[in-house]
Image (cartoon, rainbow, N blue to C red; front, side, top):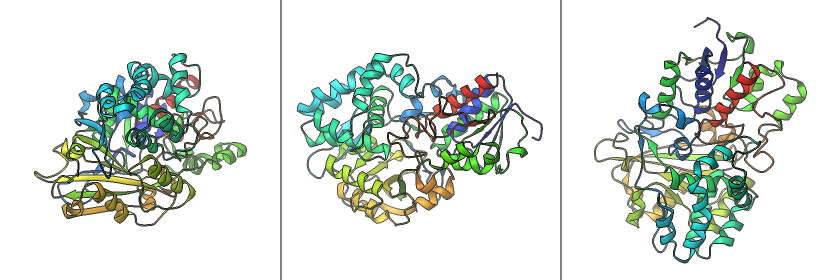
Length: 473
């Protein structure tokens, strides 16, 4: 393990593993260092509650992974990955009336939206038909797009605040709430420009490739990436914290799957003071508070159709969701936050003992918040599933401090790797022609703090590796 290698990657999240795989595929010897005892970063699975219950520690549902332009080129099924698709990607229940479901079919989803169906088809159909080209351009750093007209069509909608787009396209609360819930994944006030962008990408993914989960948990995706890397000759060293750049066994490129400030802590002496100052100004967004449940039975939704979905958005109307996202950004808490919930065990029988189930949910909170939000999250579930609390056998709650302790990249509980507002959406962590590079030709950043940002897709790692290969041919 002490022999020199061509390149080193620090951090074994999906981006770090994808960077290492791209380098290994190019014939480079590469070694990944991981502080924890298992690979995975934000894609790990653990027994957080009771014996036999397997919970995703951070990421759970992976539409951008199955749709990723790079991950789709990898033979991950040969390394044990199995995707599980719920009957429907998403459900959004309401206090009165039936839930709205995002089905795999655009037409079926539009039909359920009544008079707003025409607007939904107008929004989604052209992008879903050409989703591969859209993802190739939309999940890349700024540059010349391969499909400029398609990307322009997407951009003309994505640049709108989600509140404006929802009200311009739809007349009924159900369709507006569906779009708002998608947009709220960005952890950005819905009134801000480009708050529609991530929601549109997630919606397109839901129709084009689904919102699946890895069988056995998110760890299965990380393990498959690690297995593929080893099959290519790459090495992974776990339980090893890198503290000094000069301790690494390479004179070649070093790629950091870390938060920008962690890169400075390790390699700050090798970077100019001006660049370091700009990196320190990089801003992190709101954090998350998460609850995992071991359940005696499935969640008893008032509308049984909600049980068809792997992911559930809880939070009522567009206006209610907008208040919660705005206040988290402002540093405030609300009593009815937007809650993202996953019910994996309904579709994956490896997650819990026979007859038992798991639940996974989080809400957005101010960065660094230590306020316990478990009761608030459970009240939101109970609102749409009366009797839910009676199903709970055990729970595990994680606040922003817990998330940062689990993964140092999650500064203040920010799981997106940085605030995704317009000032940082395209220029993360600083404005550079090649955002993954630094003034030091050896050092590259490959984490979610680079384009295209948060989510499990590996594209930050892929593009950083491409940049390293251009500089170190």
